[in-house]
Image (tube, helix red, strand yellow):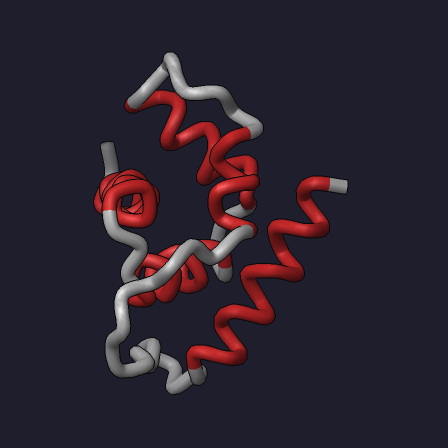
Length: 95
């Protein structure tokens, strides 16, 4: 797996386990270069028994995220902007 593929798998695993805002920031950055389908395919390549529809559904809901300072991505996007962008991207994919 490439570094970006590893980052994608680690971020989704992190969301499944403890839902840190930083995991969502990582996904946001990856989605600027790749599609949601790429994320799904990458994760399913690592974990073939995971239902494909569960991944975007998981990413479109924000479970109780640990209280933490809002992370800023490398481009200076705020948490609110990242959250809106992820919601829009996942929503478009699920249509």
